[in-house]
Image 1 (cartoon, rainbow, N blue to C red):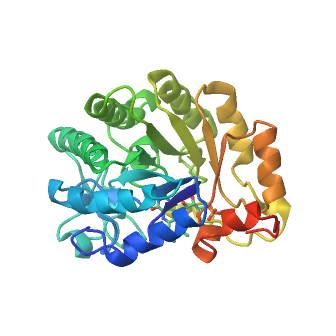
Image 2 (image 1 turned 90 degrees about the horizontal axis):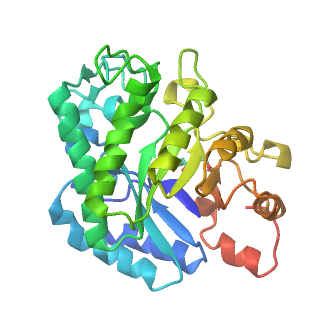
Length: 320
Ligand SMILES: Cc1cc2nc3c(=O)[nH]c(=O)nc-3n(C[C@H](O)[C@H](O)[C@H](O)COP(=O)(O)O)c2cc1C
C-alpha cells in the first residue's frame, strides 16, 4: 500500500486538480494495491498546508468522485486519510489562531495555539464524522483517521501536548477519549461494514510523550471496538527524525517501527499495516510471510517510482 502522502497539489480551496488526479492514476496504473490519500482536512481550522486536500465541505464531493473513479479504473483501492492539524496549522494558512487540546507552543510554526473549549471539541468530533460521510458519498473504499505525527488526534493522546484537566485530559483514559469519540462518531455515520482504519502513533520519541505501553492499550481498545485495520507509525515534529526517518541505506535500517509493531501484534485482532523505511522486496515478503505485518506500507519509494510494484512483479528485485 501507499502510505498517506500529502503532495500539496490541490487547490487552496482543498479541491483536487487534474495534476492531483493524474498522480493517483499513475500509482494505480503502477500496481499499488491500496492508495491512502494525503491527509485531508475536516474543517478549515485543521488545514496544515495551503494546497493540501480538503474534505470539509459537501461541495468537494463531486470532484473527489472523479479521483476515486480514476483509481477504480485499475485494480486499486483508495482510502481517504482524514485529519485536523490542531497546533500544526499556521495562522497564515487558516486565517486565525490555531486550536489544540492545550496552549502548548509549537516551535514549527512559532505560534501558541488556543485551547479548545468542550463545545468546540464536540463540533470537531462531528466534523470528522461529516468528512467520513463525504468520503462514502464520493465512493472511497474506506477512511483512515490520522492518529499519528503530532496532529490533533495525536495531540490529544500525547501527555506532551495535552495538559487539560477536564474529561479530555489527564489520565490515559481521558487523553484517548477524543480519538475514541471520533472513531465512534465516524462508525455511526458510515455504518458497521464500511472500512474505518487508523494510522496510530506507537510512540512520540519525546520525553513526556506517548509511550508504546500506552499506545498498545489504545490499539487494543480500537481493535475491540471494531476498527478495521491499524497502520503503525510514530514520532512528533519535535522528536526529529522519526516520522520520516532519513538515511535508510541497508536492510538493518528498514522497518524501523517493527519492534513496536510486535507489541501491537500481541494485543490486536485486526490487520496490521507496517510503515517506515520498507525498501527491499525480500524483506517485505519475509515480514508478510512470517506474520509480522499484514500489509507493507510505503511512501517515499512511490514518490521516486510510482510503478515500483509492477517492476517488482516483473522480477526486478532492486530495492525501492
Ligand atoms: C512528502 C511526504 C508527505 C507525507 N504526508 C503524509 C500524510 O499526509 N499523512 C501521513 O500520515 N503521513 C504522511 N507522510 C509520512 C509517510 O506516510 C510515512 O509514514 C513515512 O514517510 C515513512 O514511510 P517511508 O519510509 O516509506 O517513506 C508523508 C511523508 C512524506 C515524505
